[in-house]
Image 1: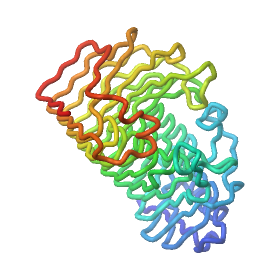
Image 2 (image 1 turned 120 degrees about the vertical axis):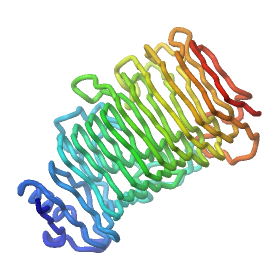
Image 3 (image 1 turned 180 degrees about the vertical axis):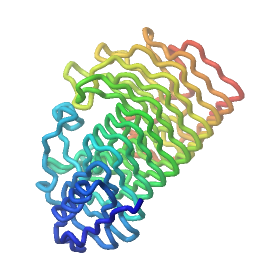
Image 4 (image 1 turned 60 degrees about the horizontal axis):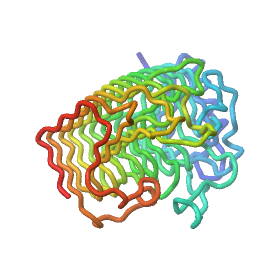
Length: 410
């Protein structure tokens, strides 16, 4: 079957960094969808945009040399009426983004081109903040690319650079998602620049990708607060990726998430990063946090294999269930870690809770070498993770620990 191709320049898009092309690109997408689908083609050049919305059966293809450049005008990223989620309970309480797809099927972003979030326009230096930069005051885009309630999603080959002090990709309540051969590049001292954030989604693969960012590189969560029903996050596979962050390379779960299960990650190279694998259910005060879930957390059936963690600023593995009345958890169990090789400033820190012990944890074929004072701590290493406060390995409230062919060297 011949693929229908819709060149954005035929709809009035003009390359350059000063002429807004949002309306022209949106028209090309809408016409493509109305024709039954096909490819919306971006040739080489820089095209300035505000929010654009993808449609079912549309592939947004960025040719080599093509750049979608986010506008520095905050009014270009308005709040929208959405049907799949309740905006008030979304992280940061807003749905603003650069590229949006809601309840779409067979939707894709492909090609060797670049999405430039123009992130520096949304930041200011602040020596009093916990990172060197903070977001400017105002409704900055909370994520660059946002898929909500979609099925059959592909993101292939594209580079996303300079995310706007918000997550690069948010995959929220989606099914059958493929992320392959992408690059995410952000300054490590920019706040909130998560890489690929997978929430309440099923059958997701992330592979062959390189991610450098200031916040968590790959996140797996089950925060259903914005959805009509509670939805687990399950069947997630991450393979053959290179990760760098001042925060977590991998983060599983957060405060009052629901069920996260059946996750496998293998063949990861993590360097110059604070935490390799973070499974932390934190505490809070009496006031609910905007990014908080509404359930008691269950995390089970996780496998991590063949991982290099080099020049680590803090813990290679950090698991912690806060002893806090507001931190609801039911079960954390069946976690297998094998072939994990770490050289870092700390050894693993693994602490369940008396009423919620970590069950059935196995370490096999691993080596953990602590090299004190060898590496520069980033902001997250110093402040968030308390680098230097822990001495040696900590294992507490664990039921069913198996350690085989594993070395701890301080």
